[in-house]
Length: 391
Image 1: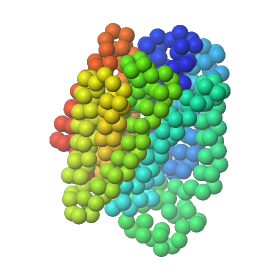
Image 2: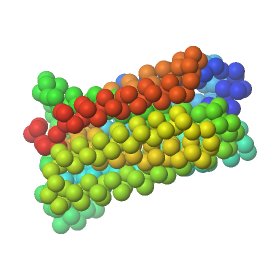
Image 3: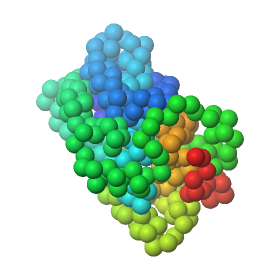
Image 4: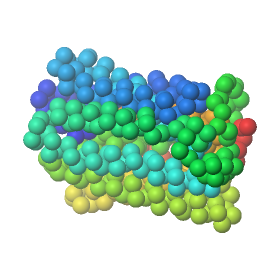
């Protein structure tokens, strides 16, 4: 959508504020299923929840061009429906990782799995301009929607929610995983909401997820528009240059995962590792965005974007690994809670960016993101922990 929105807005004469609403409408639905996705994954298994979520959002993606023809309200509803399906993905993935990945391999495994999202962004941003030029912007939604349905045909036959559910796993591997993960393969029957929400460590994750995602989602959804409006790039250059920061992010996430697990293996406490990695994930992007306000050439702007996304990826070994640290049995629900705050940041950030650009400048957009990164750094270092606090 971040690429397709350029010809769509030109064709239909949408203002920056309208574009902001279209960009944010995905998050309206995404917000609704964060906690529910965690509850369902913890009760029914990550395989089922993730699989059905992909089918749902793939169908909504393919329907988008028809919704546009029906009018702006239909488009907003279609994007929200897509968000409802995609909202279960991260809680379900967190649930699966908590049951499949030994503690000592957590950071790099999570970084590797999440880097799939970065690679998806790379492929989408790189392929979309050529597809739009050859077949028109609707082709983007048809192709990527169909790919999700193909993925499900493989997932449904090969995946398993837990090692105990996998008929193809060896006895030795299953015994090793069960002995080195801190949660049983049994489904979670009840959620201790009062206990979860009474801990400052949980609120540290929730608040910092908000601070983190404000900047991340602005970069995700508005980067091609920035290249187009500020640096004068056409849709093809905007797409190509938007790919580079995501390549940096995919590489940095995995480097950060290996560094984090290496520090833990050498005796550094999990708490200190999580604080270090997330501090880099906050202060690195903050520094790069402050520099972005002062550059006026395309190479310098791309370098700042690459730096911001590269440092941001260290959050995979900080904030995003922490749910499994403090409560592996409730990893899906905890991720759902914090990602609800993160999605709210995406909604407000997209709308606020459209409003700011209608009345101010891109420098004002970056200042808000930097301020939240700094607030998140303070909260994280004061209140987060890497120790298990829930049985």
